[in-house]
Length: 207
Image (cartoon, rainbow, N blue to C red; front, side, top):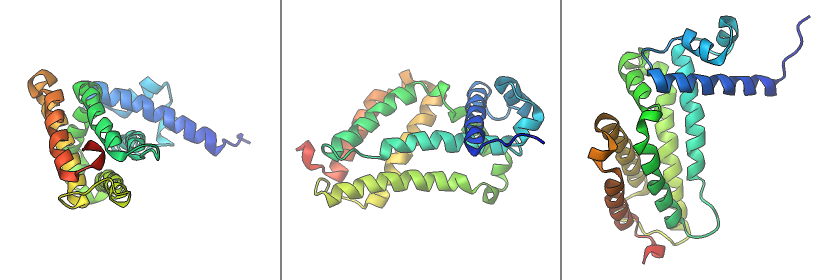
């Protein structure tokens, strides 16, 4: 009789496989990555890998979820101190991430959106829409919390501002991936973005 494997062990093993897969996707993109590549990177058998994931699209979605969970932690504001410096700090930290864009999943994501089954059947990949909504909802909650505390007096709806923030960051990421950070002047663009964002949300702490 085979020994029972605890749920905790299975989750830890899955996390290790996801981290291995992420490294492969960053290195090779989505199109050139195979299940065999992930097996080789993780040092795992075919049967073991397929006991966790159905196919390469399934692996990629789980990698996105794993990455997104870590990113969402940035949108959990501290109760200590005003919210504007926290939001400003998050935007400024994007410079490090964007300037190192070649070490991220951006290339693999672009390929996934254009060449995988997702391109022809978006309904089979609901998480892609969910992750957008989760991120904008998280940003919106921070903005609404600022209003509740009397810190923010936004000039537009928080619903629209949250989407503006995400669209700007995503656009700057793609441009920088294509052209390089020396051409897109990431730091300068983020500085201009923060200037416009400050005018939009009108934080008391900035006055």
